[in-house]
Image 1 (cartoon, rainbow, N blue to C red):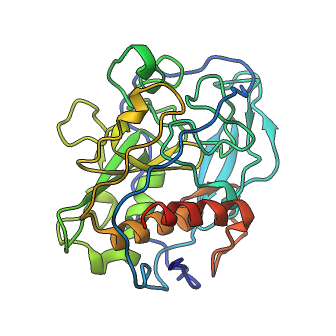
Image 2: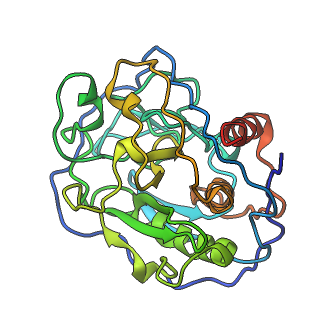
Length: 318
């Protein structure tokens, strides 16, 4: 089984789009981090496998940007290690009293379950939780009841265009395989999406069509009612405490709508697993983390926890 990696990166800084956007209603309830119980659903096995190198080497950026998060100026750094120190969000800030920080690069991988990737917290959903990577979890928009209500609650973290969100409003970008009909999409805040487009294009361009996202200007605002918007049932992988998702058009993981613990639907056959490996690995090592400005990553050091998630992910593709 091939485990792709990235060697030392260039320090050239790409152009970035500014964060922010429309002012949807913001979250901001106080409270403490929740430790809801339960287990994340397991990933189903797909029938496709891949071989060969997924990443192409010395490309991308390790340059930090600065942003005011929870009242303090903090660096946001691709390939950084994260912030091991836990803080309590001070009075006067959104979500005051909750915790932020404490998670590092080795913990960025979640599963296909919304709410996965929170260190020491299991169970699906993101209500009343802290922010181990400082960023807020995704909100899927729309409305649903019953067992799917945990996916669509916008009251706590606001609408997708809530400009109070660290990193800016939710944005999305599409990447199409040049060997199959597979279309993958990423969804996250504006700062994160702008960085990941640059890194994915740099590392995976040999697997992409020319109409795939190639620069931050390729990103579009997330609109849950758009016909081509990423959907929770299309998620292949969550990252960074469910603040980033990688989706596959046409994938219909109905387990997200069933009772917790239902096994995930396997990925469809015939997808471009080489591109999937490349994107998944690139996001894992490159997704920007807060307060890691002094750290540069060459060959990625996932740590034991991160390595376990990578092994499990690629075993599920075989």
